[in-house]
Image (cartoon, rainbow, N blue to C red; front, top):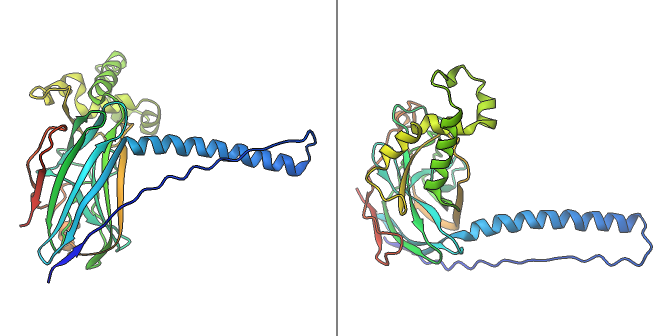
Length: 307
């Protein structure tokens, strides 16, 4: 039996402001109102900045269909800003993955995410890396993803997953940078090499202080320095795409666009116990074959996993 779900998403932004009119007489009630309005204005400014970042990259769902064979998703990634952004195209851990996919421990949410700024429980011999592509102002990418059902986890950063047999909520997250990402990384690595000593051993340093105040040293360490970064990207045009290794969240600045869909019913099959072990090499991954398009290409980028 086929199940089809059609969704229309409407995003409404409501902005409100309050004014305080004094009459020359201020009592404690007036001061309380004034303080409350000031606090609201500060909070509104922060919310506005966050909203601007969120609107820089938007995920627009164009198809969501659940059949007895597959979860079919179509979506567009849009740059709604007036400047370039760099969007995560895929993550790689032993194989290329369109998303890390797993049922959250709330036993309700099927989480699909791609990016690098996620915490992890793993220590890898070969850490994952991400590919990021430039998306110009007003440009969009069209992608299609098919996952065999029941969905089975594709783990990258976590080994924890829920045990329910159906997800009732779908959350998709895609990471992006609101600046010239390759230039930013080169700048960090260049500055780190000015202060790093040949005999510096980060294992002998105060790790919390290094993480809080000298994160560039960790970025330099995990990316293999400026020479390692250039070697990893020697076959790429850095004006269009870049490969970045996982830095255990030392590299800051990534933001995430998110779409949340409630009221779905997606079959899920938890991994066997041995597939969730904290081994440093996540098990139970299934291949997702991909066909990549340039950011300004109008063709559909097909991502298929029906095995």
